[in-house]
Length: 134
Image 1 (cartoon, rainbow, N blue to C red):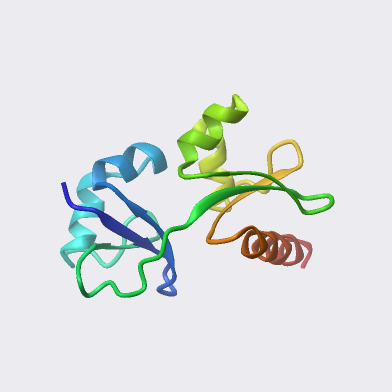
Image 2: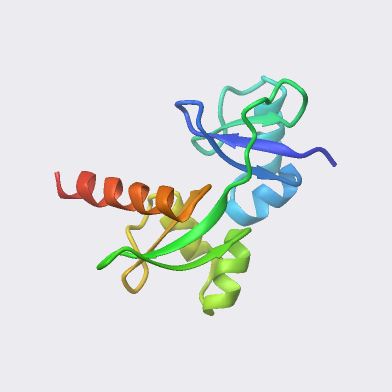
């Protein structure tokens, strides 16, 4: 299995997955679509750009899921995956995924984001909250 990188449409790295099938199971999109995007057959899949990890991916950095309490910006936790966050909090992983992918704002006052640091996670949460008010 080849590791793959998930990028936003703007080219920002979201996360590195162990495989297309892992990303598919957690995000809920087609693994064949992810693979086709990795090979350049499709430009995107599920609203993301996908690439295999190799020597050309120089900006690959590890990111974590951070849970941030919206009303005070306290960090609730840090996890390596959506599934781990959901398991620890006793909620469905699809709920965490919807929040991470901005299809839902928060769960019980907690926002989940991919980030390298807790401070970066807080900035992302503030940015999302401000853009939601517009």
